[in-house]
Image (tube, rainbow, N blue to C red; front, top):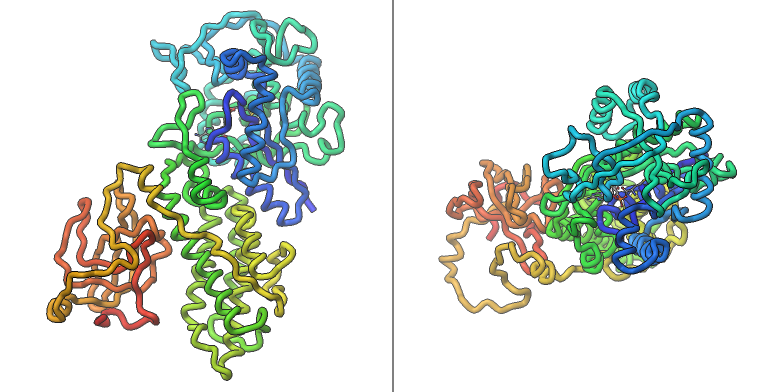
Length: 631
Ligand code: ME8
């Protein structure tokens, strides 16, 4: 068994947590849960960074002491982590005695090793970054480039850390360990920065009182970044070199946003080198979650309505959307319409319907999970795909490609949907074919068991719901196909992703164009003649490719095959279907519709779909040759 130690940044509790903090913490949670699933001994640390100037100021504004203010805000982080199903082992506060003693010990070690000296510092400082900016980084207005707030001029006698001394060792470390910083783009930025030269950093403040006193000069407090970084060790019991510290240090992965990669990948390792301690194995700096292109910011009041979206769609849909939609190293714009689309397409349609359908068939035709006695076409393919999915998932998670990891699982989900379709399992209830029906349903449930385990690090609540409905009492591993015991009683429960009322969603997005909609169940009164109906040329077609149309949230550009020709069609289904999930599907096309140009894209025909609060593509009960007329 190996150990796995993963950390998030400790967040500033100057106000309650926001979706950016949630994003990092959810990603760390996936890693922690995945490693636990693999049987590794995991420690997952998160917490709050309390001795910040912005915390001090927020407390003052409310007429509270900084400590009282922290005592009020820190629990809001814990509460959010509970709501998001975060499985941290330690929630750490830097006002704890354990941290204070550990941070002071660390400082003493740096001092004793000769890397701390006294000098004078002056410069422009951002209270939100807790960092100085050099003249060359500044504009005439002296505004913080990150927080867009005025910088303050600071001048004082400080202690300095000899960061410059470690420039060559840091360069060598980054070159010798190409995986030390993820992603590569960030590593290259850091290499460029390193090559341009490192300056010593001031590590004490004489003008501030809110902080941890310097162990050898109580007139000064420890610069917040120095004590904050040391939390990754102090939380484990660095001060006494506890068993936990010895088990888990050095960390396997420090996860954070790209804003603080430099502190983690240069300053922190240099300090550890100075203290003769082992370095963390990986620094992972993800991209920025934005709202309308702007970074979320507590200071600037740019928020995502996380609470509203979780209430509407559930925690797992929120987790799923963040992990599936964005490539982890890159920035991503949070769009409620995309969350809605993912919910409908991936969760409700692909996964929820599959579970519901398979359990419905088992309930109707068998007393319990049937014994798989009768192998047949597609079984081996499905079984093999289960195994390759497990392997591919591992490879993707190891490089933090959460989006591809989920896509890999969903390829399997869609394959099982196709398996059910291809085998036409619902037609096999006759006595002579019932054993085959039982085998297909067993395989489908075994696939769902695999899926439930594989999704558990990402959407744990759903994983549990699926297992419960299948009748599994314990969380099983996926090491072997066929471990699902026949004879279990399944209990088809409520849909795991119930339909969401999108009217609320629409109200919160007034920029959307309203579209006329036929209400479910509403009677149509205008009659057409049979001759008029016959004018419509409806054909069976297959979707060959699908892609979003820039600037049009609802639309997809489809390439379809009508047997005799290929066409391009624009369809308003982007909120309900994923491009990838559409490829290969048979649909019905109105083939003789006048061509139209929609958002600068030509459309030659129309795809039929049931259109109410949800949109579901119309298709024939079984596949037919392309171009077949539908009458
Ligand atoms: O920097 N998108 O704390 P902090 C994605 N206390 N992630 C975001 C984000 C966004 N728009 N905004 C914030 C600090 N984050 C220090 C850390 S660690 C020793 C000390 C996430 O409250 C992201 O992980 O400003 C970012 O690095 C972190 O919150 C910054 O949190």
